Image 1 (tube, helix red, strand yellow):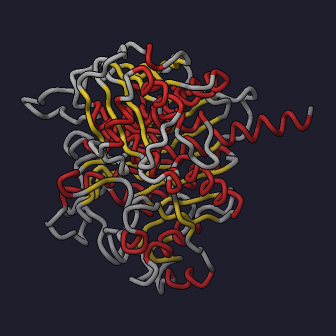
Image 2 (cartoon, helix red, strand yellow):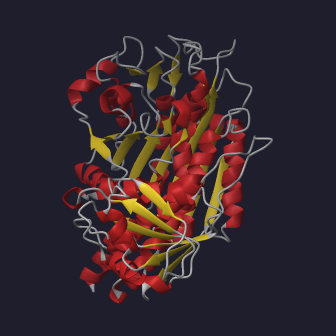
Image 3 (cartoon, helix red, strand yellow):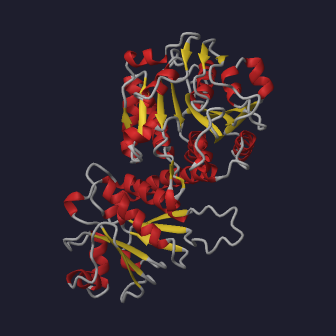
Length: 507
């Protein structure tokens, strides 16, 4: 998708649809006021006569607007001015692009950079517009024999009232474009069925990304023979009951000016289908366990965004991928396995398998001497009970890293919530027969899962993101959300900014 910036009078914009956000109080924003003057007070009259209710997210299409060069006018409600925060702004933008995606229109011009959002500048608003455009036109129709009409929107012009904001709008749109590509890439991987998206498929996807990157990304695939030689027995134990072989996928992006600069590492849980193993899940809703690789999908999405934006950082992306199935060879409850780190684990529940693949991947990350490590996983149903479907659960062994991720989530409006990782919770993982058990009982299930992972992170700053409640939607809107690609990408962009500020301070 192409994003342009225009600072001229919006009434002169030649477009298939002109999108105008308005508040309920009828006090028009700068671009809307100019359009109102040029159209003989069309917008003001619609509001005055209450023909358009400007409540938040409400839209109304006007097929012809006199005095304007646009074919159509789309009014979008912003609700009450005093309540216009980040969430309200995004809701209005999403409503606009949802409507645009249904039109027989290749292009649109939008006036959202005028909207006042406290503490958010033009670049942030432009970024949110670009992300929303990508989300709105996304369709997963690969397996439909008759996919139906596809959105035609290909070009979006951002109308900027103040010329001094033009460059900020361009940069914001560029970043939002990259993040939007990453979000949709993650959604597609998550939505693919388990008989297509296997560990080997994810490995081939990494190789394709590397090939298409013109040298910016490299990919290394460790097959089961290599994992056996490495000693990654915990990862291998999860896939023992499946005909599909497990894989450890390693992607490296060298963007920093110093190739030896310590990389930031993302680790994704890639369970491409989770039947629960011998601890078999209930049949109802088991089809959604194809989404158990959404942590891996978000890592692929973040890599996609990084390749589009090209920040000056070094990044290592690791995906631990397996299929968790019941079979005569499958790991049994009560089995004891040896991890890559050397710790023994008593497997009390084979459906707590995500931590068993992640722990070996986290140990593998030590060799990169990372500046930070963030793992992302649909790890526990308990996270949904605790936080619902709005916030991602966050735990960390480093408070500064936790704050950086929380800040990134606020900026990206892809928010997380910090949960404790106290030593008292570690006792729930005690085992009579091994160094630790893979579950700690029902109380604080999300936290004890994080405690398990923390045993493998003593060599670097580490954080864990439990996305079980945010990675996909159920019901009529069933499908992967692409979260937390935006959070992860913002975190990496912030690390680039921090590095630049440190260089400036040294100079």
